Length: 441
Ligand code: ATP
Image 1: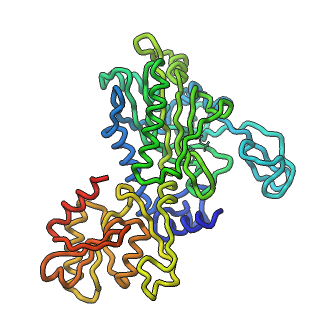
Image 2: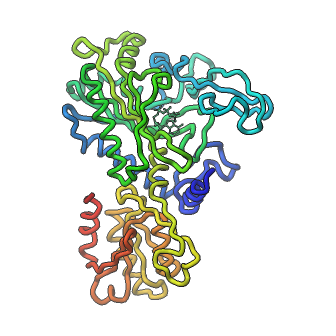
């Protein structure tokens, strides 16, 4: 674990972004719960993605509609998709000494990286999680937790095409949980066994597949950049043929430079006619469109992995603090420079001091005024400097301070997180001003 990752994990716990699952029972391996700030931030990421796909996108032709399919599906879906065969299995080796298990493709040496012991021969390990349906635990009633959300889209291809009266090309966007029995979960929320995907499947004519493959990779890269991730921390890596998923004709990984190395945050794949032709074969339903199987270009991102990338990219430490006041000289200030759209709390409302009832009353009125419009936090504990630092640490873009002048002229101080600039603003104009700021790039 890098030093920076330990600091980010500690911030997540301390400020209510992410908790270990079932912590009071000693924790449950590689499962995490998103706390009050975490759920706001994750919802913001998902909303930004959803709006991007269903509202803001202007592909050369066609549009994008949404879907929310069930997690549990007929097990036949997973036969057709290739997930039950070798296509979705990692090669696993086990240490004969300490019995730890590793993915063969992740090993840099031929002995156990933990204890140096000898390893077993590799064997295939299927990543699908099996579950029972109904009251009797027999094989007649089992299925799997979905390992990717996109299969729900493919099996609804005809439903969507017909009910929405669409023409090729068009896309279907979906956000939802997926489950994989990963052999080596780790790096905090980077690789877990339960995670959330944000996937868009673009159905097009085979002759246009390469064109759209190029189009979507550019669009997806820009989405991260527009939400504040530094360009130099993103790259696109072509996946060599032998490492491609079983369904992919072309594959790219969009990678982020995490403290633990360059790692995939989103996959962009040309799935060809793999899915629709296999579902036709297994279901007996002809899923051709005007006599051909449309090709599918997918953009498959992870809400959790991008959450971690947004956090890592925004995290800054300032030794001695930005204000350089004597008290802060030896302290490290944390500044989370999250994009305003992603930030979990948009506005902090702070009475200058808490032992003046008139100020507290006025601050609570401002809080009530803003709360229906923005995610706000009211905080009256500690010195105002300390409270500013607390809001900087959670990435809150704006703080509003209610002081003695407020009582005279109904104005407040609006403080900007990144510049620490302060300006005087009329209370009755606050909603308009913040809405404008939120909606500009
Ligand atoms: P990896 O090579 O890291 O196992 P993958 O290539 O199998 O990932 P895809 O099947 O392309 O991943 O899944 C698309 C996206 O879903 C990934 O880019 C990632 O954001 C997310 N994802 C996949 N597996 C996990 C996981 N175990 N934990 C968190 N997110 C995941």
